[in-house]
Image 1 (spheres, rainbow, N blue to C red):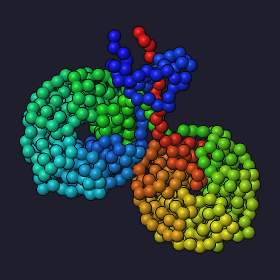
Image 2 (cartoon, helix red, strand yellow; image 1 turned 30 degrees about the horizontal axis):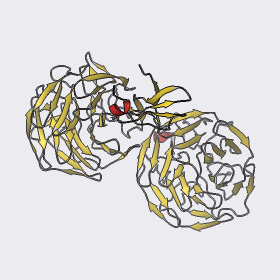
Image 3 (cartoon, helix red, strand yellow; image 1 turned 90 degrees about the vertical axis):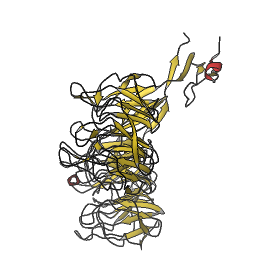
Image 4 (cartoon, rainbow, N blue to C red; image 1 turned 135 degrees about the vertical axis):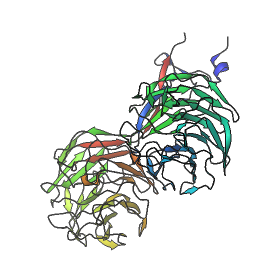
Length: 612
């Protein structure tokens, strides 16, 4: 009889406690529990960061660390888009516009080497396209050589050097196409003919080893075909006939999901392909939909946006792994004692302060221990729309409305506030800041309203000194980071702005633009190269929208549960994967609600195994 090591290549070890992680096929005997244990496979869909625009029928391609979505329409009738969104592994950010706005185009490649071809433009029925464009991560370039057959709702796989366009609806007959075309890097040539003409199918693979499943010809299809670079071969069908579904993976390991099944009904059902057969997965999309933006692999795929109806921004991530993956999310915690807006915050997620606010104007300060809020010492000068930063035991509060623009500066020692004899040089309200009690920055605001100022002052531990002004006079900014490396973003310069300014210790440089211009967001969280901002003024229509900043680009994160503006945030020791928002204005009332943000986590899924 063969041993486990001879079969699998791994030895079963005796341990007194489970290791912190494990790899597929690894097993051990836990002497404490008396069980044979090892990593078990988890197959599940989980919510991911939303796309910025509610669009469907988008061209898409790439791995789960560098993918793109391009074009699309907003429905219910065609409304052509030329927008591009880029996925960096954590969230979506705006990319360069495509040259020919269209929907239902094929896609291939990656974020920095992408290809988009075919598709349709308004009106109804659409004008079928042959247009082919390549993307380098910065701009789309139109090729002089388009598809030989104009088509839309087509499928595509491959790279910018070797892509494959399969099926679709062809012009002028508006019937399902059975022809494929191969891209050699500069032009398209005719490939072999599909056995089943179809459109809106799931695709996987590369130019010389492709898979096409489901779709629609004259009826809903479950047909599956495999391509070896020369010939299409019919293989085993899917379990559920459907079209407008998503797909990802290779010719021998693929996943297909969502779509419209017969009789017409949206589905979130998922099937996996092992190179021979389709198996119905126990995992299903939480939001049934069609026409998703699909990319990734057979073990880590995405369904971005789609049509429910209506078009949605919801994104879900599929994982087939020995790890249990918990998606990033906001979760409710206990309320503050006093509902208020336009307050300031300091600290970290498990040890925070909520400072001042309105209405009425108050100096109340509350301390958060990671679970509940406790009222502590009040500010000496009651005020709202003030700046603050620091920790739960060493903070600084400055400026604000009291009731006019204020110069007051107070420091916190963990139990009480002390008024500094050295105030700001310029009174301001609706200001913001970042840093510590020994080295902080105050920036922007009003003096007097409605005059916005660009003034910036640096706190050296005892007094304020004027330093380089903001590039643009702005109020209600969000700030995060430290005095030698901080960020000022959003706010209003007369209208809501998504501008980002980076402070290097002596001067400002312009950073990446936020995906959503926002005013009166909650205070920021994290560092200059790993920050988090959420919410904004109700009239901006951004609800609880959240974005992360990597020092160059902003990308989406899961939204807050409570839409709000003017809530309290955190200080310089905080991290983007552990955010906190408290209080604020929901659009109808001041709130006391608290939410905590937790970044995506992954842990080994350890299971018991029997020897029978």
